[in-house]
Amino acid sequence: MEIIASSVGFTSRVTMLHKHIVKAGYKNCMFSVGAFATDAVKYGEDKLQYTMEPYMQKSKAEGITHTIANPVFFGDKDLIEMPFSIAKKLYFESFKIAKTAGCSSILCHPILFDLVEERIILKAKKKKNHGMDFTKKEELRLKELEQKRPSKQEAKEFYLTIAPYAKENNLTVLIPNSFDYYNGTLYRNDLSDPYRFKEFVEELNQEAGAPLFKISLDFGICNLLGQNYHQVLSILGNLIGLIILKDNDGHNGSSLMPFSSAIGGKSSVDWLGIIRGLREIKYDSAVYIDYMDTYNAAPVSLREYIVDYGKKMADYINWQVSMELVIEKYQSRVLFGAGNMCRNYMKCYGEQFPPLFTCDNNKAIWGQTFEGLEIKSPEALKELPEETAIFLCNMYYDEIEAQLREMGLKNPIERFNDEYMPSMYTDRFDSEKREIKKEN
Image (cartoon, rainbow, N blue to C red):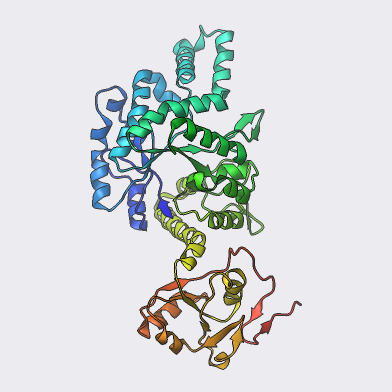
């Protein structure tokens, strides 16, 4: 999978977040075009392609690439103060800027420009003279516009409007999942219910005459809506072009580090369902881990460690999701370890991807059979062809890999893990006694 870091654009001074991201070892960042919309750009006195130059030069020198962009769009405060025509122009200009930055996709929320402009005009009038000449009718209309969410048809019309800009710049449009909000309650809509969402995107691609649209699936929103992650993934499948991973408590739309919103030692998010689901659809596209609320809440002096931990979390999830893809890419394989991980490997993959044998450092069990595999000495690995992969089925990964390299082995060494298997043994095997542990 392609791991993407937070958006960190700057126009002159390098941000601390950018420094943290580079130090942590990220190689791909979300490209936020809005980060380059200076006041001069907002009033038509400068251009995005010029204000982004310092960032692009710095990123290139540091080996940072960009594959997904966010277009420019402004908050109401900016829109009240700047010409709306420029704001709209900059939005569509974002597609060209994204292509210039090397992006292949752009993440677009549906926007009803006419209604946004009407809302801004009313807000500006209300702000002027402290609302003294603001009528009751205008107040009701403003409230209606603030609560307005695009209907299915309105969203479709918006996406077909931006389709030519995406085509012209060879960009895939990523459509984010969303929800409806009424009376304090969140509801699933056409861009969150997986069956309707799939139909919506397929209809768009048909009308566009090309596979121009894909889905950006935010699991934070799935959690707020109480959705079954495994089901959502299995239905949307290869229509997904971006996965956004974050934790929240299921009630508030926070962006927390994965596995951090926990009660009683259990995460609020079903990470087992997510990882299993991503494995099943063989997901191998972009992943953005959004933990910005965790980052911003941390003391400034500790934030670099949050980013570093976020990178380790991203690598861990990538490792777990790609486990089956790694297993199946080898024509032949052996295991190292004759315990619980070996049992779970054989239970889940032994028939489809059978190992030649397993080996173990325990001399007492050499020559025995375990889960249908002969247990051999590590020395037997020297007889393998160099293309045969060795899968480590033991948590002492670093130590065992160092042992094998010291033996002069040049074979691929992969790390197997059984925390998120399609199925698992519920009992545990005692490696010392060589028997199933008895329940107390």
